[in-house]
Amino acid sequence: MQQQLISPELLQKSDKILFVAHLALGDFTYMQNCFRAFARAYPHIRMHLWVDEVRRTPDESKWPHLKKYALYDWVRATGMFERIYDQTYSPQFYKESIVQAQAENYPIVVSFAVLVRHLYAELVRKLSPHGFVVAQKKRVRLFDIRKHLAYRKLDAFIPAYKSSELRGEHISALYASWFQQLFGITTSAHERFPYVDIPAVWQQRAQEDLETQGVPQGARLVFLNAFSKSDERSWPLERMFELSQRMRQTPAWRDAWFVVNVVPEKMDQARRMLAKSKLENVTLFSAEENFFQLPAVLSLCSLIVSVETAVMHLANAVHVPVIALMRQTSPEWVPIDTANSTIISVKSRKGWITEIEVDEVLACVVARESLGV
Picture (cartoon, helix red, strand yellow):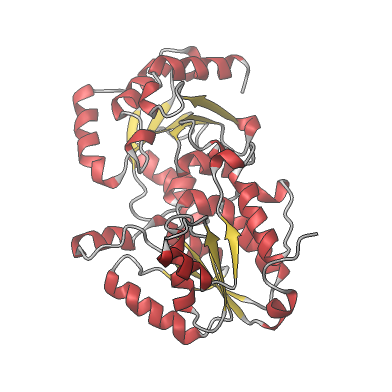
């Protein structure tokens, strides 16, 4: 059996640990289970979390949006982390956060960052000059001196991965393998299934907000999400609108209401589009106030149609059937709940989501309904 990277002796005598990651909602959907497993295995170790904002900018006009990153609501609500470094969106606050972390004298710092890995190797050593530090490590060209020097700062490393090397493994299995390599923690496939504990106040708010928008109580709901952070993984909003009306032409969805997700910066445009189109039984949604607005609304739906983003994974967490529109580039990120998930992939290896047509999605909806799923 392979020896774990961080020795049981060090873990036994350590009172705290700092985890570093450039977390997205999709990442935390699956890593939450790993952190929970760590807390159970080592209850005497206090967990701290450094959320590194890759969109860090000196432009103050962008700070309010970055400060309200929905992930922070979810991470805080878990109660697992005694301290969260959540102000790394500003260069100045980033420097101040480093000083604060150094004052903690962390005995162990672990980075899960998979981008510019050598920079995170440098960061973890900076955060803990004398502790045991671990980060991801990628193969380095012979004369790339800076990267060689950066990786020498590590006491141990997690080998970098490529999608092509996973041989069909799900991303949750990869995350679980990291915790096994590091801490000797084993999690079963069942224990890796995502979950989200939605506070009752947000469940109630979701119901009230829909009624305020004219959605009848008890209406059959469909959640539609066309937005991703990248253009190649997004679908035109017009197609989601078209899908809603064509679904209403089928017997099963004739009286359904469609909750169309919109990112805050596109909401004004979406309102104009909706007003111009005069669509029926469509309401717009954006979780602008709190992260839990999103899973609360998702949990009320009968079906979710989403591009490859956090909504797709949260659908599994709230146990609602999902039709996922995906590229072929990251098969490890397919929905984990195969029984309640249908995947529509683009035909070409590097094709964009826009290759998928409304007809294809509608056919999938009709097929699911005919099978009673």
